[in-house]
Length: 340
Length: 154
Image 1 (cartoon, rainbow over the protein chains, first blue to last red):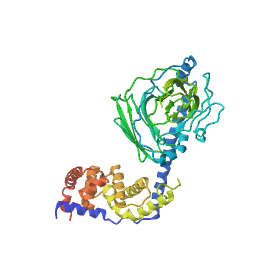
Image 2: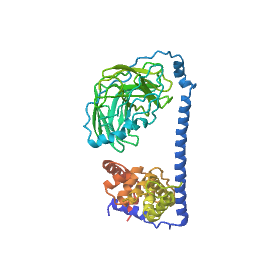
Image 3: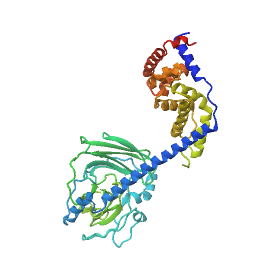
Image 4: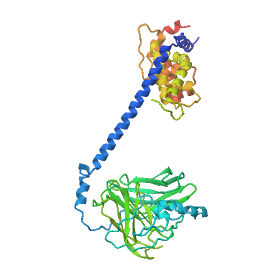
């Protein structure tokens, strides 16, 4: 008999002693332990929820006008002049190079999807030209201000592959820090894959159809150009590029807390349109207003996702100012040219 | 706490299922627990603790390897307790108490449970190389601690 065998036999002998029979008291002890575990887990969840609630209340409190953290913004706004800044460098235009030609079925679907993707100018005192224009979430007529508004008749919107689009741009967040965003819309229940040298991510598209990927440039400044491949299963692939980065914070000004962006003419849309949007991190308003002499309109903005805007009333090759504003922020004016 | 979880079982049903597992697996778990603890009362507490830990991580679905899952929880629970050595403890108990937790688990699983190195590696969450080290050091320490008692064993 080896030493190992002797030790093994000793262990077995100790373990094999007849255990005391299982009685109701032992079972009751286990049931008590299980109940205690559930109580502790519930208390832990409540504490986590309570902590999150407190953080939310504190954050909301700090965003109220007059609280110390927002005094800087209030002060700046109160001394704002009426001069409209010409800030076209807030977002760097990108390009959408190619999308697959839409199938006839996709074109048939385009009418329904236009309600979420296309904003056509609404003219004061004139009803929308098509039901889809009036159904834009959050859309409303906006007083054009002092600029005269030229009545236009909006043609029926037509877009190539309107159910899948994406934008890549450099914008500034509510703390004026630069970040790269890739966002857009895709059909509900599809999967979108955003890939670049800055990272990649998969998105399951929700009922709203939105997806958004962001990258803070304060972490590290990428070497331009940066290419983005945005792939949607079953609906196409987009190639975007940002060719220039500006890591410096935005200049403090009257638009602190609201970072509008504008993306130039989209080559795959016919007739041509423009993309406007903004990040209103102070939550003064959940809408963005776009105004020009060819029409003014307001659209709901969520998570910085903007809307495509057409100016069918503008003459071809005409260059005209377009003002973008949110809440009480001073509008930012962009100079745009209709080329399609 | 009521309500159905991902498995569709209510909390009461999940509790009842774990109590049934306790009734079924208690004898086997208790044998391991006796080698990993200082007395029978602590062994009973270890088995209950293993069942509660299993309940906490169980998704309510049936799956294979419940025996191993419960045993792994028992080892985890025992690892967090330092075995007390009583004056009336037998030589084996005193010798086991001198081992580190991982050495004790490896020795018990191999000598008593008859587990392979791969099984031990999975149960205690160590690489196979570490299991071999725990075994070599653990068995030497155990035999050394038993001393002349080894010769008296049959």
